[in-house]
Image 1 (cartoon, rainbow, N blue to C red):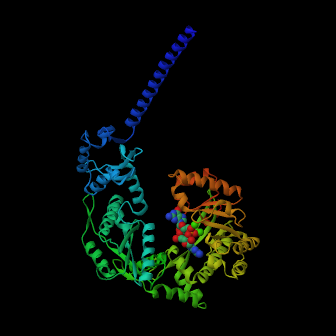
Image 2: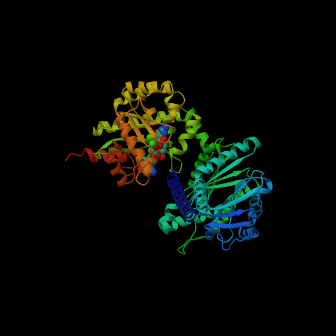
Length: 585
Ligand code: C2E
Ligand code: CA
Ligand code: CA
């Protein structure tokens, strides 16, 4: 029995040793892990035990501070290291046991190193609610803050000049308008365009051109305040929004201040001095327009007017400039021919097959000639014409004029082409739209199969079913339908299914970043793939380079339209092309 007992004891002894060894090993592992954690973390800790009144610093203390903490009183040294505004929060944060709290997190900034630090204080209490241990963690969040700042910055500002970017400006301007409505105030928009920027650029070189854009932009930042917002829209275009323009922030004063500055030259980084002038268009809420984008449009239109008056000038929006003209267009139906022929002209842009490079057709694009012969972009006046109804007679003129020219080409060159026409929602919704277009085609002897109407998704918004039916009717008559600007609206591929369309135009914004942005690449590839599976043809718009062209070719995109294969050109330009193409060898 004893033996048995001895044996048992022995076993127990061995068990204890083994258990102890295992315990030790576990402890060592934990210590190692702790050491590794401390070494690799970008944090430092202060540990304080109340009972022993013992304080210790752990992990990356040296990363943050150049002094040691040996007793609780040493914490005061920390107060000297942080920026002034953080001293009080730090004092309060360190001693949260005074408020019976067990946890608090706050941020501080260190004076010399400039580090942003997140401080987390944790206190452990015993059953009697007396504090026993305190742990303070210092975490370096400098990089995170910098990234956050940069992202916020990029979302709101133009990196080159420090002015607001276009999107954010439009948002702020919208807020001005809302406030102006309740406070019964005015809001002015000044649209600034550097005169002859291309010539300046050619003269001084592109780099100095960038300098000029930047220097002028930086100068403009000085004029910004809570009532004056300024944006750099694009290369040589700036836009100013003024809330309640009066006194020092009246349009006249701001214009004068800018002109005074422009009397002196700008000094470029390469030392050369450059003089420049600007043309300014001004529009005011609520007189000129009541909506943000329209207000900017109006200011842009009259800026063109300032240019045509000889530049270095300011032009106030005067409804006479635009509305009178658009009214004339709407009212004087009898004078139609004369009025339209005097003011508008049609340009045509080639569309080519991607695989062969062969000409497939042309898109008709309207141009407005002002009285000085300058061309005003349809991107500016079409939205206004859409709003006041002038788009209906303008659109009818576009159809008739383009079909007339197209018929002439057909007869003369007998080259198979498709004519693409842009159709606004308002226009398409007219009751007699289908009949009138078919009538024109009949008059000029053009088969409907050779016509393609470009519509945008906005057309489908109001009355999806009704519009779908109208598009189906057009297709039954033989006319092709193309969905323009795909990817800019709310469209999704699944929603496309079953839409009565033949072609889909992938918006320029995709093509722009196709070769530089992986996401765009993936999206474009899948759009082309899916769209082909749905049975539609694809056109890529705004193709400007050989690289973009080749890549889209690789993706089996059907057609290409853009400056690379041909800019929009007057009738004669296309005629010359057709002459070349049909030349007998
Ligand atoms: P859209 O239908 O998307 O027309 C394409 C626009 O992109 C045209 O501008 C064209 O000149 C431009 N573009 C073509 N290729 C390139 C390129 O490679 N690079 C760049 N940077 N731009 C390129 P445009 O002629 O100023 O027309 C602007 C918009 O005005 C058109 O956009 C269309 O929505 C509208 N529009 C033009 N003509 C008419 C019309 O007769 N009726 C209606 N309702 N809208 C029209
Ligand atoms: Ca178009
Ligand atoms: Ca388009």
